[in-house]
Each structure stands twice: as C-alpha cells, then as structure tokens.
Length: 384
Image (tube, rainbow, N blue to C red):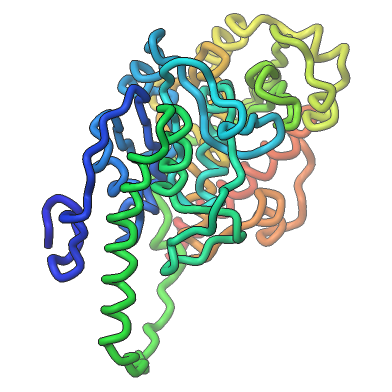
C-alpha cells in the first residue's frame, strides 16, 4: 500500500499529483462513510493543495480547528453547496481571498452534514453548473451535471484564483486513478459468486446497549423543536433556535415541558411544524431560563435518549447544552433491524399502536414514541 494516497501500489496515482499554491483556504468536510472509499477524490485534492485541510465527521459544532478556519477575518468562509439561494460562483464569485468549505460524500451524506450543522447553514452559499462532463467514469453520479469533489475544486478555484489554467492539472491524478481502475477491472475476470450458508439469526436483544438493563433508571427521553426557516429563504435567513424542549424520565414518569420564546424572527412554518400556537411560542421563557430549569430536572447519571443528534445540536445552537450522557435511539434501531430506517413515527408504529402524547405539540407526540421504544427495548433486553 502507498502510505501517501493509501491505494495499492499497483494503482497508486501519486506520480500524477500536482502541487498548487492558492490564496484560497480550502476546508473539506468528509462524511465518515466516504473516508474509506478507495476511489474517493477528497484525499486526492488535499494532497494537491497545500492550503487545503481535510476533516472527517458529521457534526462540527464543537470542532475547534473548524472554528479557527471559519474565523479568519482575512478569508471569510463560504459554503460550496447547491440549493435555493445559492449564488453561481462561476458567474458571480466573491471578492478577495476566502475560506472555501466543501462537503465530501454522496449527495445524501452531504445533505445530512449541511442539515445537521447550523454553522454551515449560516454561511454564504455558492454553487455552479458544471461547464463540462465529469471524467469520473468509475462512479455513477445521480445526475449528469454532478461532478466529483476534485473536479468541483478545479472549476471553482480557477475562478477564485483568477487563473483557471493551473487548476486543470487537478484532473491528472483523477485520470490516472480512473484509468488504473478500469485497466484492473479489464484484467480481472468476474468472480463466481459463492453460496454462503446463512447464519442462524441471533436474538435482537444482543444488539441493545447494556443501559437498558443495568441503568434503566437513568434513561431520559428528550425531544426538541426549533424555530427554523426553510432553506428556500436563502442565506440571509436566521439560524435555527430552540423553542420547545420536552423530556420524560421513563422509570419514574417525571416529565419536563418548557417552551422558549424565539429570540429571532419567527419563521412562518414554526407554528405548523411544532404544532404550537404563536401566542404560546411568544409567551415562552428565555433560553437561559429553559436551560436552568432543565439543569434542575436532570441528574448527574442521566442518559439522554433522542432520535438522532438534532435535539443536542439545537441546544448548542441556542447557546445552551443538555447535560448527561447521550444515546442515539435511531442508531440503535438501525442495528436492531439491520437495514436503513424511515422516520421515528414509522419505527414506533412497527412496535405498537401510537401512544397518547405526553405534552402539547409535536414534541409531545414524538416524546411518547421515544418512551414507547425505550420500554419495548427494556423488555426485550430483560427477557431470558
């Protein structure tokens, strides 16, 4: 294996790597599932660009390196990601040196990264229509106009740096990798499929965390609702903020239910999604008081059970935090069923009929579903 490109030496592309200095600082945020893809181009791009940094992860609220990169006043950050409100960077590029943030992954993965990080949503957004077909012939893109990460950087940096010609050499390692991969496939005959004896199914309970038996008294289900503007509102829309926090201690039946008044303009869709009337939202407490009340409700050994990480990230985006150990029930459900999941509502309905809500609004309904899941898993984990 080549220690630089991390490819087998027989298909190493390092001899084709150029070195291109840029005024633009490039920050590549790579989804973890893309890191081990042998034909990815994010690492390839980082090896070509000395001013590029490659970071792997999904949630970046607590990333000090990213915060430093985005906080450089000499290079204000912009996000390369398509969608409503995005400006065409090839026709209308920003003036002066910038920090170019690029999300690397499948389109589904990239959407998750942008959706789950309010700091990325707050950045000025740019996109472009590729002026030429992709040369990434070994991986099919969802649409003909989509390109790989290194091709996107070739087009965009050529405009930002004011001289497209040097950045055409970014295609050299891409072509080398593609040609080597296609040649390797041509030399290797298709392998015959092996018939593997299926393993007997193991009980689903073995995939449950031990907290469902040893720490059931510590389990607290948490749901948060946001004042969130739709993406089509554009880059000037206010960032998301917490407006409703509901929690339930499963073992004791204690419920926490507090509405926070929005400090930013109220999105026209917030009342619809939260299922709370506008007077109730505007009459809520300040964020500081909400978090103080939750600190009084919580215990040092609490394990906060939520569907994904949105509730915790929303608290951080609202200048607060939810104290306690975290447990992602969505990830646990995915391990249980060993397939991709739909919504919380769909998974909860597969266990039992919908329970009555525990508080007002959508948070009350979703909180009851989380409690239903926790009780079902506790029973499963405790079964002999």
